[in-house]
Image (cartoon, rainbow, N blue to C red):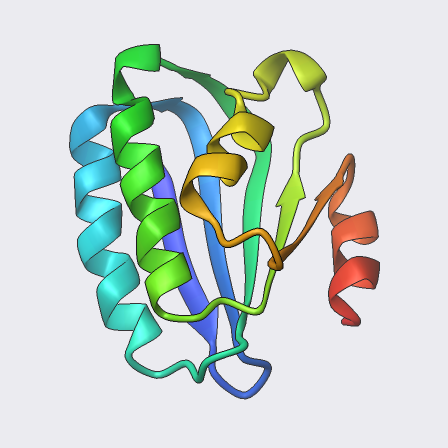
Length: 121
């Protein structure tokens, strides 16, 4: 499951990856992201929370790349990921190289507290 939310006053987009993520959920998340992005300005911050993530079939990496490209097109200013268990990293560093601009600041944290500090919250 994916939960998509934004805080327009803080210019923050939050996506939580929970349990097993399925391809239809990724496609739906793209639509939800588009709606949430409408209220955010270029330079907004993105928090990708994998703290409750369990698994994702690697065949769906294409959809993850599409999510990343959507964020890049809307000029995300900073990406902060919470990945407490390195074994749950689905290749985000490699995907970053192909789907985000090289100057984008990307931070990976182990806890939400670390992520909040990186985001200045």
